[in-house]
Image (cartoon, rainbow, N blue to C red; front, top):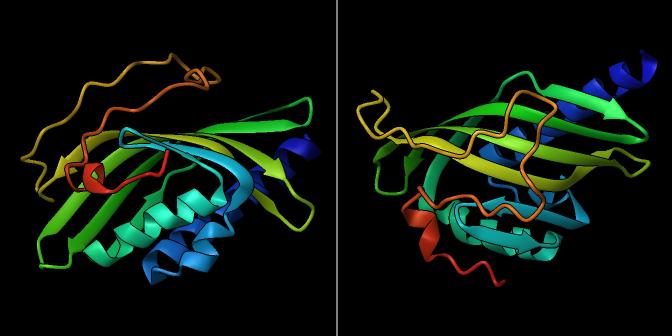
Length: 172
């Protein structure tokens, strides 16, 4: 039980640091949430390594005045020195032109303990909804991976429902 309690605490702290970095648009703090060799799969992009991830977000942050993320309680699996989770997510944002955006998504994540703290080692983000805050926009159909601990395959490329992110070069 102790390993589980520690893992849950460390994952929640990682999520809190991530949310804080996004709100402040602090690219260095954002990058520090990811292991050097992390892989982040989002909006049709496969971003390999912390440098590519921060390069991608350096192009995203200026498109917004503010981004407020809310991470829900992670459904956590711990065993054999590894931890993974499914975390539901909402976003309330305002684009640089003042247009509001609401988003709902699912994160499938794997974590690594790097001594000083835990970091993301692999992530897939599935957009479930993106549009007006009144939810008058489109909800998306995504693959269903089954009840936890089911995870998408490591080579999953999430569909690009984001509109604006597809124009940003992920750098491969």
